[in-house]
Length: 75
Image (cartoon, rainbow, N blue to C red):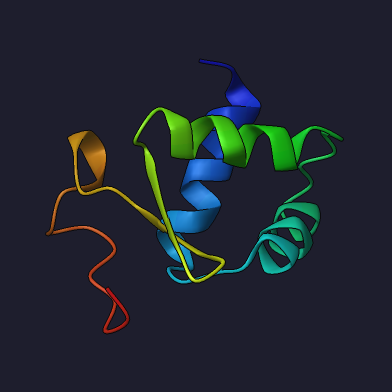
């Protein structure tokens, strides 16, 4: 995947339960300037890298996002 895709996953991993609007704001705060973030989020949901429920997003616990990292109470 692209660098922007990975950065969006990082943003969601660090902010579980974020809405798309929150993801956009957080991505801008990190200096991610891609205009395709909504498409990247949609692709990540389709790829099962993100879980979407009630318009909120979480990173699936696979690969580098296993339980010892990003252990937030919202997850």
